[in-house]
Length: 496
Image (cartoon, rainbow, N blue to C red; front, side):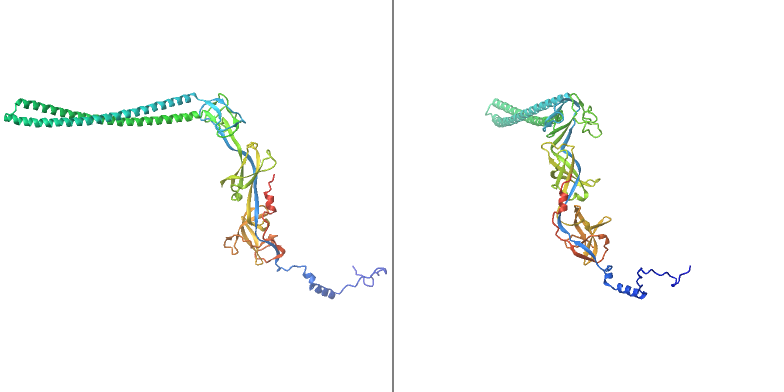
């Protein structure tokens, strides 16, 4: 292809404007150098050494309110299923479902005639043993009197022995004197013979008195033995009475099971009693339907009656482990029962299980609600809330934390440089979170926050350890956030 020469190029029409002359290469280079040194171009690019502008906040005392809520149900304060202790027949039943009963009211009566007769026998045996105790006591009195009589007879025999001994001594002396006189021929031997006979008679009487003493001593010993036996008989009779009384009380206790009574004031919610039903301790009422409420585990034992105490009802809340330490007796709570009212019922935690359920890792908290009008029915669906309140705790916004693994961190402004520190947190209401501890600057341990920490807020993903930071104008928030702020109030408001 041949390039046309300048002479052969077509001439532009006279009416078209001639183009401006193109600048020379030198002029273009000079213009570029001049633009590169201008201030306007320098402002378009940020210097890599300029500190990152950040906002900071310090931990502030704040009231944090957290609500732990979950579906639940109404349960009676007490529920007791009445089973028979005896095997027998239902002779009479007195109450039906829905009836209100008082403590001790007879619900039904069983027919067990052999037990009643046995009780009567035991009572008669007790009466017999009481008479035996009385008789044994009288025998002790008789034996005691015999001992006293034997002792008196012994004393009398000893006294008579002294009298006869004196007679023996007197006639012995007289015989010796008369014997000497007879030998001298002064007294007739006949007188000596008479005195000798008197002496022999006194000796015989003295020996008889000694035998009487021996007999009296034997009688005394025998009487004392009889007294001891009579006293033992009293103890034996009393022991027999105690055994008979205990046996009678045992049978009386069994006869007490003939009447089925209410254990407390309440309402009958189940009746399986029918006249003439044969009931047993192991299965209750075997004639009850398999769908009868309140069957024992296995569905084999149906209670005769079920009684609910409904003047107070209970609601359960299973508190998660992270909030368990902050729920105590007296913690505020509310219960919403749609079938009862559209407004939540205020209450408080009445008791806790103290220990966590090892499977669910939750703490069982119970809320008692008064139910004097009996409008809160056991089994009603409810939504229960427990309010966890942490007044005046050191708190930070939830956006100030970052998480890594199972640890929580925040970024601090320390002498103009970003430093990541591990923190320990407590209760949170979703916007604010309690800070219970922070890692020391040297990384050697934990300390409590003192409110002087400068915690960085904003886009924390762009921060690096040790990077320079600068607090932007108006970027330092107040250290004294208002207690009980909006977040806390919203959390405390019951939801439906």
